[in-house]
Length: 507
Image (cartoon, rainbow, N blue to C red):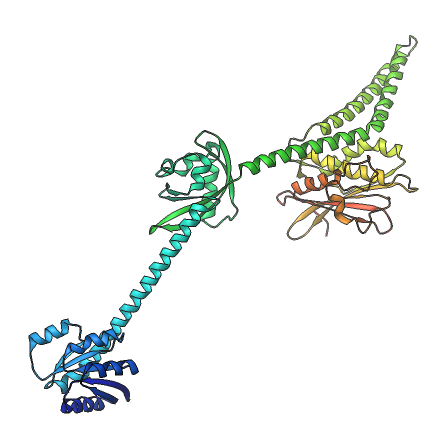
């Protein structure tokens, strides 16, 4: 197979030039060549095109070749066999030294070796260039990362072998320590003792990729102040070794604000609850006065001198039942009047609804409202904050009572059912009334804070907003829409823990 070869010959005799060209042609090279005798001509030819090989009578033209930027193989052809001279020429940077006598044997191998040497030089040069670029890029990124680490508005700490090796100014500024106070110490030394075990577990989960959620814990400042942070961590390489980088953000002010908001929300819930109980006052007083009148009458009968002795036990039983009735009413009122402790306990939702309805039934009677119940039996118990859920039910029923004022047909319907799919299960609670319903423009705005359709002074607009947030706390949802004919109905879905035993149904 023919191979093309461009050959620049400097200072060789015509006979040597002819021999060189013929030897390359015999080795299947298609040769084009130019001969020059002086440096100026050489530079012109180097500038005009690239060459595959330079063959010269001496190494003196090598520097001009390299100055041109070309890495062309350079072979010296000499008529003398001088070993010392050959060694010196090789040291000067030429690729090979061939005598005129050895040309037939040495030319092709010398050229191929020169090509390999030139290739190695180019590869080395390219590698060095890549290394320089990579090093420069690494330096650039290091500058960027260091600038980010020093100026970012979050804390960065790097640990190796469980010891801190770097912290940025955010960490030292927020917690009152000097950088030297951190270096060489364990990060757990600065974490609140009660949070250390949980932080360790969260860090392990995050490093294993089992969690992406930032975790929250308390740290101790140098003055002993407790501050809250959220953190994410990642495995990195730092100074050529494996390390762990933690990124923290101080959320102390946010936690304090959240607590204040929770306190306000708790206060609003309590006020709404007391307002609901106030709304029940008339019916409750009537509900209590009835058994009190019965008790009073029976006591008067017992005080009569001619009262038959065999009737005493019967009358005392009547008195006892009425006392129990009063105690239950007072107990329910006291239970729901107390501030919620935020405790979730497994309860029968039907029983909780019944307790609310028992208290509100007198109010329904006074308002001439009929009550229809359709509570599904054998519902599984679910985790509930009974105090807060009582408030949800009371808010919805109170709104229904107000909505049906002045209507001819007044019916409050309460239903529960179990909704089961392949993946999840819900207890569904439905409250329905025969009021005017809600306008199309209202929709779910009824759950917005301070939104109310009542007359001024008759509502705060917080009842349903509070109910919405309570249902969210229970991982449930609440929606409202109009009945097919008239009135509105609220639908609450509360998730069932699938570990609970669900009731079986007949096929």
